[in-house]
Length: 150
Image (cartoon, rainbow, N blue to C red; front, side):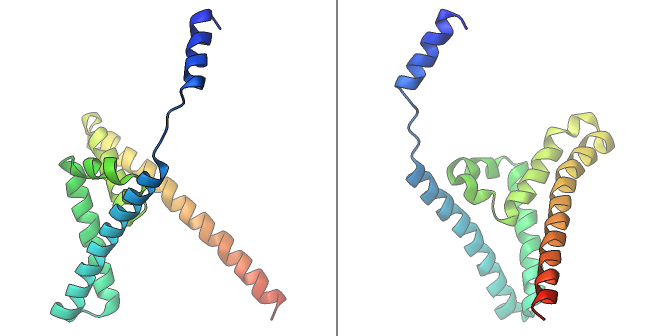
């Protein structure tokens, strides 16, 4: 390490970056809560105004949230919301839709099949594999506990 790098590290150590953790956590909670509130409003309208049963209303609400998130990502608005909301925009299903849409947009120059579809399924495949693996693990633990205490 040369002298300039050592000086730089010394300056950085003396002046650490102060992150507003409480403020960022509150904003993430607020934005994530607003996304979930919006989903609940959609679900309530579907149940009360259109007389859907609970299961169908939940499914349609999820589809609406996913499509709306994909459109907002396509127009660059979801990223602006994400700059303020942080993890609050990642946790709901809208964050998954944002990730898939962003991946597709970034790789569209490589073509539809080799670019968009390949990169979208890289992300989705990892998430699906993690979901299947964790559900297998939890169900195996549940089965073992059930056999032991039965």
